[in-house]
Image (cartoon, rainbow, N blue to C red; front, side, top):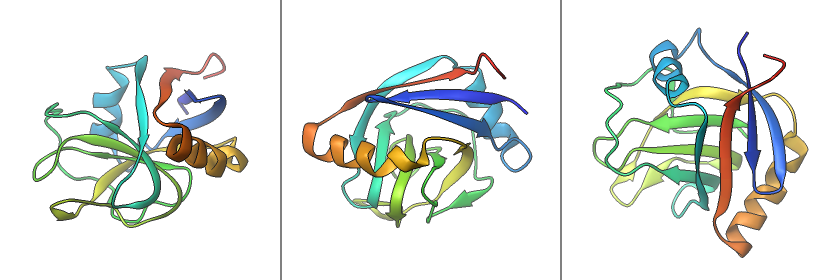
Length: 140
């Protein structure tokens, strides 16, 4: 199993790719590792934080897609009616944008640090954008 390390704000999380259920999404993201960006709080979706990717075209369709990721699940919206983005749920999420309901590919799950998710969400909401970095884990 390929393991990831995600550093977000002042927190670190271990994670795994959901390769069996989202192989194309995992492969496309793996090519971009290490990946760094800015995490901002969602506007319409509830308790989540997201990384805007603009018009990035990863040539992906839907696989293992959901509109309701659980806390610790990371989804990638491949673009289309809204901009491409990555979303990390820290609580209840109903994934949407200004154009309405969306679904994203669940391709990463956190495996440690879940107790820090709500604080990461609050920090992003009240203190603003946080740095985030995804990399293969030394142990993976």
